[in-house]
Image (cartoon, rainbow, N blue to C red; front, side, top):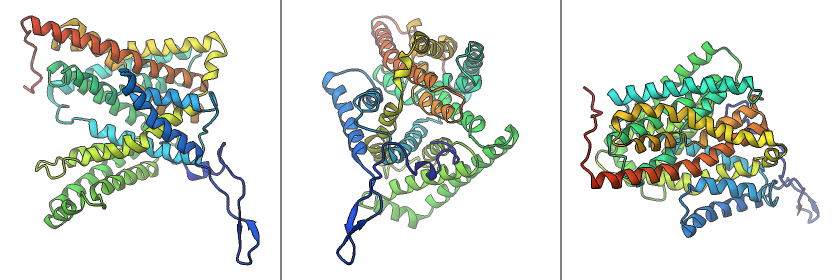
Length: 444
């Protein structure tokens, strides 16, 4: 998703790959005449096939990889760089944009706001501040080397963490309930929220100074809070609550429809405020997380339904289409271009890994700190999204964008595997040795 100026429907008048051949039909007199143009759905079918094949391939081969990695790789295979079967045509673009919106919505739902308080919030905030400072230093270093045009954009990309990728790793290792696991999750949450806000503030694509954009950002946040307050107020209506309860598991699926309305509303309003629409999508998920506590357990399957719609239908279109669009041939045109992949990968590990040293007092073993460093350096969604924004604004060369995405792919493939091994070994060692006492994260 992007700002309104870059994602206006007029951009989709005649994208490459769209079948614009006129078709004929019989008019009232029985003669054959030219009818309106037809849009081909061949690429949609191919992307849908990839969305099915990717998780099945992982399940059959038992690879410990996120499905999004396979989806991007298969997108490259069926795209113009590979077999040339699929193109990023109009239907794929639309479904991809909806997929990105759902991806950010579900990311907002993953934030555990109850954990972001007290000592935990202070520690993770300091960690992210250190990370962003390192990212700026790396960004200016890359600029001096002629590799990037915008140090700030690269800093935002490098300081991000893929919360949706690392949560399953921590759950598999049984770390989510430990003080160490909690600080890693909280740090990843901040590293997912802050880059989205910064992208909207500095790279919305709208003219105006930073002060004006900051005012618009605050105004939009106030609007989102007002929307959340209105939802809370409506929930106190017994008649409305009973109606929602009656319709939630029927063909109306009223709660899912309301969530999609909230998503569309905040995305549109973010664009109207001159901000990145991804911020609106993320805030839609965060708003649902905050206002829909479901303390009476009346709609326990609601979030599962949203995940089914998002991850089951739309989100794969975003990642597969990313692979279709990637011009991977530019990486192999010269050794210098290919060398940028390990440079960006090392930058990710430096920027997000070093601040993990602050978590040492909460870790029982040093291997846990190393695992936290690797997990925090795992990022793919933000490099894909922010990188595309940079290309659209002319701040990032297409070659560097491909190298950045390739580095993100490697981080998702390599870092979680190593960190999961470290965490399992640490857990096995703790079961055979007396447990160490770790400091509490409760607010004094």
